[in-house]
Image (cartoon, rainbow, N blue to C red; front, top):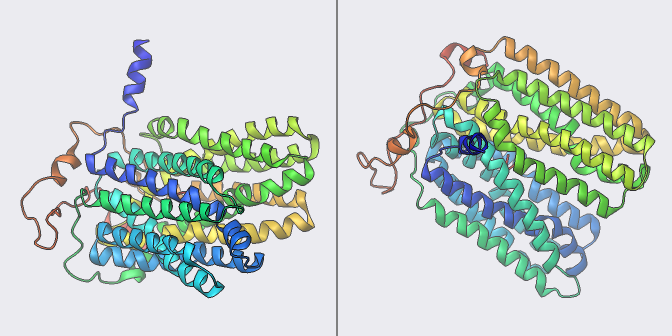
Length: 460
């Protein structure tokens, strides 16, 4: 029993208080997203009587604008700071989603989608950059892992709450959904007033995105990540349900059970896996994650051919456990790796491009997957597995040319919580922001040479 208690205590990420405030805000944010996003098309079509095509385009606009918006938001982060950018993003999200109850014409929905989409595009780069700035290198793996837990937990409960409230027979129920969603963004914004702001560089960053794109390791990591998201994340999230429904006779309730298992595994396993990865090679871990994704695709194909109904649901629950483990490994490694690759003055741009790589994968993956599903269902999952195997090999090759101090996951931080003490010192506060300090991220960036030649969720 003492050994078990000691292990549980060892999972405590020992993060600074400002980071815990951000994690609490992240739960509120993802709760609101879960309450609204799954029901937005239903609202636009069933309550406002827009066509399904128009309703889908509104949602696509809202979620897709980040491909362009996230890099631009990253530039803003590097100019004015991560906390200020995150506050602006949350304000836009509150205004955008909060305005949907007043929509009566499609143009109004598209206008609000642009507002909320701009906020959505700025959220991930500023959120990830702020976490990187408020933690030491040793704390980042746990901080980003905890973020994945909070995102999945909040979104899962949000979907459950939204499903209990929303009803097209009671249009006012959707007004409540949007009001609660806007309230969660405002609650997160309020918490940020108690989080210290890390000062942005005093002068404009020389080189900007050109300097980022000369970072060959980072660019290669982005390309591999986009391919992995398109071949694995996007296929399971969007193409798995129609495939198993048609080929394995799995009902919507069974599909819901599979995704519930996914959420539970991530919430339970993410932090222990992040702890287990300490001191291990990051690119080997990424290669393992891609290999597990390939195994998932192959297993889905087998289930579709061999099982039907309830046995298929049971088997898919086992398959999704493997998929979830791969998600946890990838999620624990990717963002901290990008934070370590990025020079402090370019952190926002790095995180913005990292977000765009995920969004690109989610844009391309469903399109290609749906075409393959229509023409060759077996070819879909064979192709998915093959791409994941190729990505795994790419991660291994990339790891061989990356310096050890970057490719190795930091071990547990020794001594008390250094970032906590530094960030809350009271000297050198700026007149613009009474909570800001001169604290900078821990000086554990990649050496200059790799930066001459060389990301992250809410995850989701």
